[in-house]
Length: 252
Length: 383
Image (tube, rainbow over all chains, first blue to last red):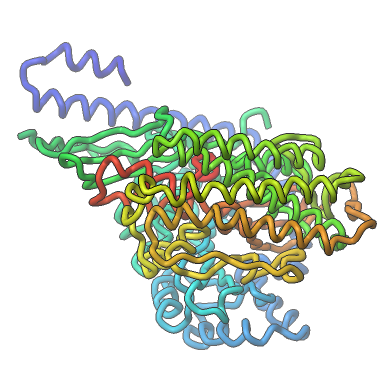
């Protein structure tokens, strides 16, 4: 990038404005070119290395899918309900999860109900409404953590908000996981592809930095987030979002 | 009078055009500044007053979460304590509890007590280090020397237990790595009693010092509502009047059998935030004494795991009260020896959001007092 800057500045030193524009353009062009280059490289290595593995693993994974209900996959979730209901569920946890699921029948499904830990899976179109409902009707007041999980075989990225409560002592043990999924693109272009979610910052202010982290680490863009800059990664990071599964650790 | 440069093409994420103002000066604090830790705060000042502060962490980002995905549950232990080596037991605690849930093993009673003792000792070690830096931040070099020296007492104690001074890697799923030495209880009691006597003296030199009070009282006030709204945790939260300590609210291991008190102050300023950790240390001494008394004198300290244990296909979210606040660990397992995804929700990262909020409108000279009172550890926030 420094080379291109020098070239541009030596050409026209007189006009400052055009100069700045040109520098800006050059930087953008260089960064874009580098991004594309790296994306292509990553794509090439991916197609070489990972594909045979996936084919090998697929038949293995089919078996656990049927028996293991605790995954967030919508297909596998209904058996989890029946399984856990046979065992007696914690009543307090069930009461407030039922509140949410009865309000949004069809859009919300119960992920799991365990002692002190509950999870609801929400369609991404409804996440704002459900979050608003939780904020208004339940004492959850802050987000403890926001986890982004990559599911390449489902072509989806999961985002899990862990909500907790400081104000209500009866809820102080509870952690409600509010989970949703967004489509995942094979060739990510963070911010400009379909991997987008509405931001929950208006309801839960504490998610601000967590969402910034997920944007850079997994490429999930949060609409209406006021500050979608990088947080931990360097500004000129031009590779894949690093917490995606197809980003390989060097030497591994 | 600089005009805004409007980029003709869409900027890639990360790059931005910044306007230059005649009145507002932009100041970079860090990342090499000894006062910031490996972290940069971009401060905009108007005269002596901060109008905007933008924390820029990430200089010590090591990708712990990515690393964890390619290592098995046991080999993850030493590197997951690296984010806070001074508090290595507590930062490892939620991970170990989570793995125990996933693998499904019981921990022997004695191991639980040893864990609590080690965690409380480590909390004191961390707070002493933090307090030393807080002292030197405010130009109080005696307050740097005293905690740094007294910390050695407990480090020696930890060395006797674990064999390492700082990075212990002591907790493992199923218990602790090795038993405490034979005369440990007497030595520990003696050292902790002396340590408590020493830290009580800090009140005279530091906490009752009018200069410290003048510098920290009424600076960076975080109200109760904002502390909750911003989702802060630990000492920041408790200094703002919210009674929330996971050792009491969600007791893990044997904390429910011990008489644990939590410290809450209401003023929410830097002084309260700096005093809470010190009160926590005094409370830790009480907990250690109780645990030494109640600990079974003999017994197993570890349930043996199978080699290369596999977690069941499930996910867990466990949290503990570390030296800085709630430390959470979200593990998603897919029935393999490695976690599918491991997320560390650490208190430094959660408290960071309060920094720009508190610094706005503050004088530049108060920045160190506010910044370090957040109990912020840059390496932990970056992971």
